[in-house]
Image (cartoon, rainbow, N blue to C red; front, side, top):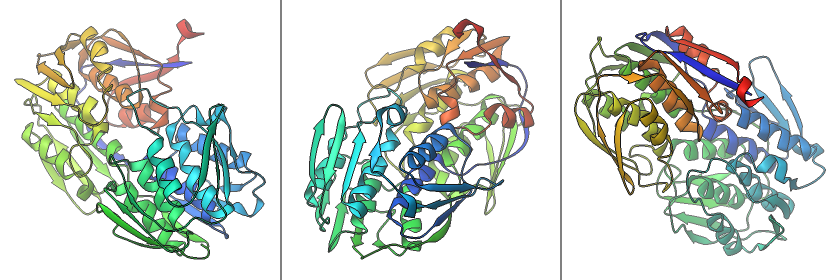
Length: 423
């Protein structure tokens, strides 16, 4: 098992390329199950979750061809089974995204209940209730979801909570259903819209993606397509915050400023100078210490919950006091205990963190508890005096492509080593 060692004190300065979005790549890989012809996906990030999803499709007998640029061609004509086993699904919740496509195209699916980061309840019943409304017969036995349907039928579905994966799963299932499906209270995230764009390229009839109401008119079949994954807005924002906490300058290329309006607004409020172009964003702190900013997470287009931990670090070293409210997941403050080990001043009151910024942090051994907490600890290490040793970094490899290499390009002192204490 590996760990990261970060030696703080370097002001970041440079340019990096942003990868494709993990949260679009995973559902789009699942969406290829709907196509009767090969689908080519471009700009796929090299991440552990992507590799796991590819292995999951491969276990079903699906043919995958990957080129040197990590473009993936998926051919489902060789599929042999409709089974998603526990040993793969347990590592990431996104595995449930194969449920809707398998059921819609092949009439059956046998999918393990999902696992992933323990950041809070993300109930599967929203997916299952939506599929039942479309006529599916579903039961849960021995930890597996067993679903069958001769052909799904269109339905009007209201999601009781805004859920990205449920919106994607039901939207994919509806593409081959008989009749029209309307999903209300749908997630509006750019990744949902990107999945819809891929499905439309495959021949689906979808309107309203990116809004709270999505309408899908079922078609008889979907065909091949070529689709390029949208840039990863969370990766982009993470590196921009890294520049802000170190008082540095970071230019992110191959990204989309339109996806990050609230994040950029908060960074400007923190004292950063922000410049943007069609596919780039530059942040320049000019050596200044950031100012404290209040954060309240909520579904898109509000502040992403996936950026809460990174802004917690910014506020921990900022000038002033701040309040961070987490309204999406009830158990997403696990990184606070690790930040306290580094010398931060944070008090928790329910779903609110009260933070008094301190001039600096001190390096210490810390442990990552989930994907974005991992990134938060790396950012904290960048500004801490001495060395910060971050263990359980398998979390970070699920969502950040070559994070230490990209940070090295920006001037960070960071290296990956074998964690002998975990051997």
